[in-house]
Image 1 (spheres, rainbow, N blue to C red):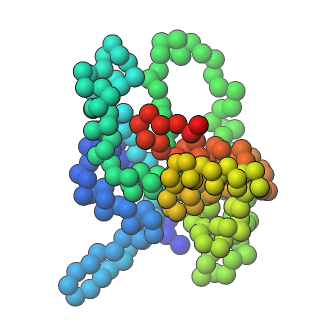
Image 2: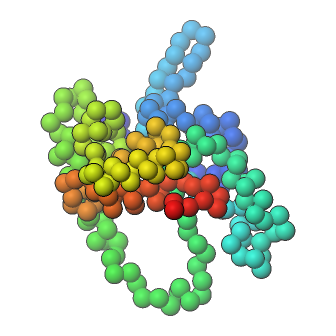
Image 3: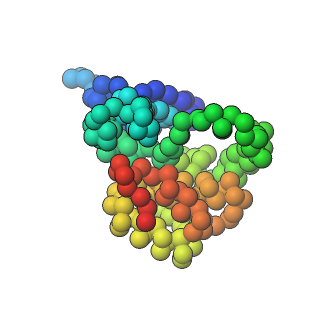
Length: 219
């Protein structure tokens, strides 16, 4: 099995759009195919994509004192450089607000990096045990690789969770891809929670990481 690499793209909208669009299939399949007249060559290309971007070109969308005169239109124009299908392939969208001077005086978080690393390692081990009984040709190691009937079997939520997911899928117009990605994230959140089953809180948190249109919400 090919090793997982990390692809970090800083200032995502500044990349050529055609280049970003060419990443869509490798992100979906974990393989990159180069087509030429006489041959097609496929390479392993499974990566963990991490991308960063400002909400707009000036970077001060949430600060009226510094934002440019085109806000919020500037943010819509800037973010539209990334296509919907590309955004749809990113599982976790995290808004990181600017650090205020008062934040620097806050006490350290209750859970440190070592504790988080321990929980992540435990969740990875739990996933490895879950999939170790699969035939060698179908062997996977993480929830991100599960799909089809296997994903339904390991990530089917409880009744309350399924009700929430179906309602959110309708309200947020989730694609089939987005729906299944929510299930994978929820399954991993359950693993981090040492929960055998995917429950409503796991679905709710997974949904909170989906990208909303500028100004949208989950209500």
